Image (tube, rainbow, N blue to C red):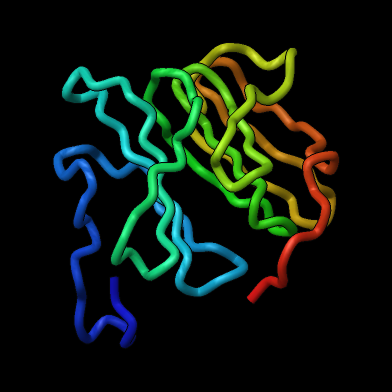
Length: 153
């Protein structure tokens, strides 16, 4: 991480599974010091879900993978209106938390069980766009998960 425009850098992997592939890093829209990261261990035949949160620029990390089923996590997105609403795309679908990662639930009942490459949230319309591998793109209204929480930076 750098706090001086790239003049100096500091490694932020302390306490994390070091040899796991970092599949996504996302900065919070609400707090400069908060960052989310997902890791993927399938290259080592490790199919645990790795989802992490740091609130101190990566100095310390908390495991927020909770009850996400076994399977690599490929992408994470924070809802632009509520810091406690997070979405992750895994090798078997999309999961959502409304409590900052304590509990996760499968998103939707009509989505295919497939590899999710990317997630994008349209901030005005509360539409989550889901990009899959071989099963097309999907769009879902996620307004029901959002009651404003916190101010964006």
